[in-house]
Length: 235
Image 1 (cartoon, helix red, strand yellow):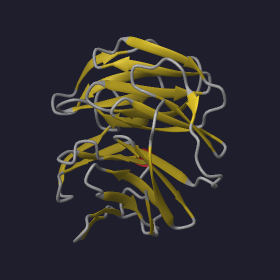
Image 2 (cartoon, one colour):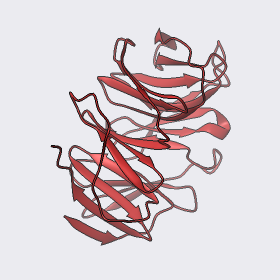
Image 3 (cartoon, helix red, strand yellow):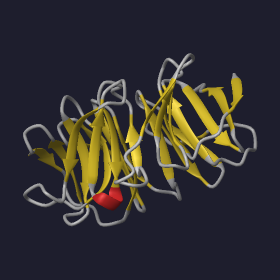
Image 4 (cartoon, one colour):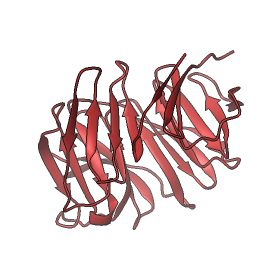
């Protein structure tokens, strides 16, 4: 559909309006619209591990080295800080993604399970059954949470109930938007579409894939400082 030249350390998100969220080599977090670019930096916390801008009014930045999450508003002003080192009981967190309202999906490494955590009240709304393999990736929206481990892809609803479980056939990371999950294995992409139970290969040009994201039914592939945009067509 389109391609643009673009330089970033990591592209962290693209919304339905084409707003780009990305980090640079100086560990800054940036929001680029058609007209403006605004930047947030927190040099004390170092490198951003992950970011989720699914809710642009409550963007979360996760700094795993400091076991801390920052919540930013749409102007990238800090509105909340969650330091898991100072919270009781202590949580050793490896993955973070957005939940509904004031909640975050957390993977608790010490307990090897997912928690839906309300950061305003410091309460755990629900916990899942522990998993037996290393977690590779975590993605979510208000309704669903997808957790990719070395053995399986798990799908949970917002009640924490397991509603899908798929064998991991070598998938390494994933992208997710509105029920479409795209997974990669090497430079091949696969899709698990909404209301489907099979993971099917995505036909695309033979590109090396540095990064990929999905927004609604648009697939973005980033490589060699070029961001390419494709329309997902599911059969």
